[in-house]
Image 1 (tube, helix red, strand yellow):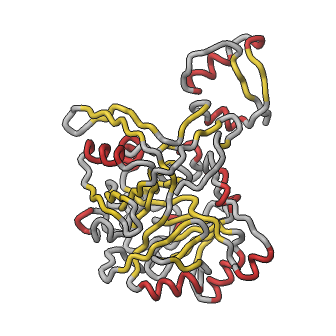
Image 2 (cartoon, helix red, strand yellow):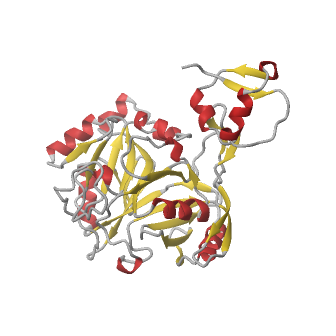
Image 3 (cartoon, rainbow, N blue to C red):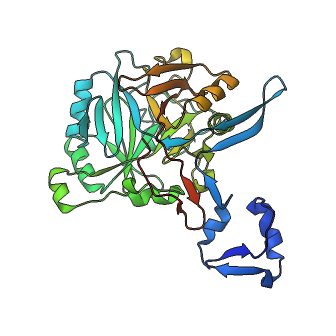
Length: 381
């Protein structure tokens, strides 16, 4: 229960904490100075100052027995928008503004700092209906999902912060929208829209300890006067949850190829299925190795730019394209009507990614001593 931080009084060779701690414990008590800091900081420290520009340079084995080196360095800003499939934009706008109390935007709605874009499609390949038999916390091996799980927390979903769950519950209940609460006892509510898209909502305290850096705009600032016109005060996206078949393959793609940072040591050990916590700038990607009711091959998806997606802002598209080409991943370049250059691709489970270039992104340096950014927080997109 103590709080301890150890700083060598002489220069030392940088090594992992797992290797360093036994040597440190054997050191003379006169060779160290003692300060206070949470013990979890020591156990989770991998470097005193780690850049969230997320450099990955590892030797990767290929199926032919040769090896390829990924030197990917991607400066991530975060998740500027989410794209969801709907069959009617007007109907979707009414649902999100009237029931979820979100604000209209040119292409969808705003949930605080994050835009949710509606992608209209008459041929949505993903099932909408819930399979009532898929109601367990962790399905047995080989389980085949015949529909969406009862609990959206075991499905692909997007987590968004808000000031309080109570007004959201009242609105959902008034409109007969089913929801479930977190299986783990967190302050989190899960529901779906009319098109099967899963959502997770919770106050900032629910997500603050799941990440090393918690953007201040997710810590919703509520004023009484605001709530008179905004019954629900939204913060923004804390993480997205993606369904995958194989966690190691997914980690290789997102970390070794795309340069995201693995923060799985922050993932609760009690979760009864494999997965990952990955950092992409200000937000996280949560990987869930669970049965997937959606078509998970690229051939069965609507195609680049027309599919449900997560958008990631990056300082430059050059390292992204180089990494995808080196890995042999198909991609498509495009330019938005607003002028931004973008790249679309699919991950190994046919989840679409969209990279949006923003040269104004400021790389965040993490202060591992104070668990805070070394530079002031700024909007990164």
